[in-house]
Length: 557
Ligand code: KIV
Ligand code: ZN
Image (cartoon, rainbow, N blue to C red; front, side):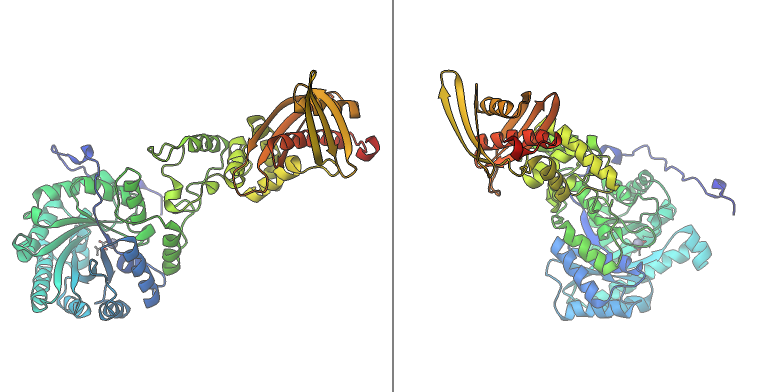
C-alpha cells in the first residue's frame, strides 16, 4: 500500500478561552500508581511468574510507591494466585494500596472481589471503553448503551464492597480510550459513575482518564484533562488520575502537562514497559520532577538496582540512552563536551545549585560515578583525557601536557578504532611519560646553596653516576650538569609539581617539558617529595632524548 498521509485525520483543537495549564509548573509530586504488574505484565512476550512479580512488587514498595496495580485477577489465574499470596502471606505494607483491574462485567467484578478478600485496603479498578470506534465497531452500542455498562459495573462494585466492610475500599473508574472519546460523552459517563459511587458522601473514588493510545500531541491531552477538571460533577471529592501510553513518544510529556492541567495522580511503569511502545515511564517523570527541585517522593538513588530488577522481570533490556537510567546517558565522548564537563564539574560546590554543562542532573545522585561521565574514543580531546586521569588516578596534568598526551590517546583510539578505557589511558601515560627509563633512576641528591646559586650533586642509576652542576635552583643546577655530561643544549621550558592525595605510595608528582638540541621532550615522575619528583622527571625527559639519539647510556656515563 502506498505511503499516504491523507488517510489520517488531523487532531482537532479544543476551543478553550480559559486555558490555564500552560502557565503552571509542577511544584509537588502527584500520587503515583505503578501498573507494572498489570499493564506492563500484559504486554510481555512471557508474562512474569510469581517469583518475578514478587521481586518487582518488593522493589516498587522499596522505592516508595503507595498504590500498586498488581494484576487482572478476573482474567488471569496467575494474577489471581499472586493477589491471594500477597494477602494471605501478609506481604502488603500497611501504607500500600493494592489495586486490581476488572472489566465492568458482573462476573469479572465478582471474581475480583474474591481475589481481594481479606485485604485491609484495596482499590477496585473497573473500566469499559467509551470511544466512538469501540461503541460503533466493537460493541455495536450507542452512547446510552455504553454508559449503562459503566453504570452497571459501578453498582456491582458498590454492592460487593458493601458486603465486605472489613476492607477499606477505593473505587476507580476508567473510561478506557478516554482521549479518543468525545469530551461531552466522557463527562456524561464519568458523572453517571460518580452519581452512583457518591464520593461527595465519603466514598474514596479515583477517576482515571487514559490516553490508551497516544494519537495526539500532549497539549491536546492537557486541554482534555483541564476541560474535564472544570466540568466534572463532584470534582472536589475525588482524584483525577491519568494513564498515558507512549505511541508518539509523548507519554511523559502528556502526563506532566495533565498534572499541570489538574490531574492529581499518574499511572505508569518503571522504565516504561507496557502495551506497544509502552506506558508512561515512572522513572523519567519522577526524575524530571527531581531535576526541577521537586521531591518525587520515590527513591531513585539505586538506579542500577531498578534497571537490574526490571530487566530480569520483563526480560527486556534497557536502551543505553534511556533517560536517567541508560548506560550512556551521562557519558560524553565528544571533546568539547568533555572539556566543558570537566571544567564545570571541577567548579561545582556541594552547597550550590547544580550547574554543570551537559549533565542535567548530578549522576552521583543515581549512584553513577564521575569517572564514567567521560569516555574516550577518537572524538575525544584533552579535557576528557585529563578528566579520566584526575578522577580515576588523582593525576592532574598541566595544560601543555594534556594537549600533548591527548594526541597519544587519540592515536591509540584511531589505531584500534575502539574506545580507550581508563586503565588503557593510564597505561599509555605510564608508558610514554611516567615510566623511568632503566638506568636513569634518581638515587640520591644533595643540594647546597653557594654564593653562585645552588650546587647539586645527584646519583643516578645502578652505577650511581654522579652529576654535579650549578644554577639558580635545583632544576637549573641538575640541567646544567646533564648538559655538561652529555654535551647537549638543554632548556627547561615548563615544569609543574603537585602533592598527591592519599591512596598512592608517592606523595608528589612532577611533569616537565624540556628542549634538547631544539627538540621537545616531556616526562612525569612520582616520588616521595616534590624535588625528587621534579629531578626524576628531568632525568626521564633527557633519557628519552638519549634513547632517541640511540646513545648508549652506560657508554656515555
Ligand atoms: O491503557 C488503558 O486505557 C488501560 C486501562 C485499562 C486503564 O490500561
Ligand atoms: Zn494502559
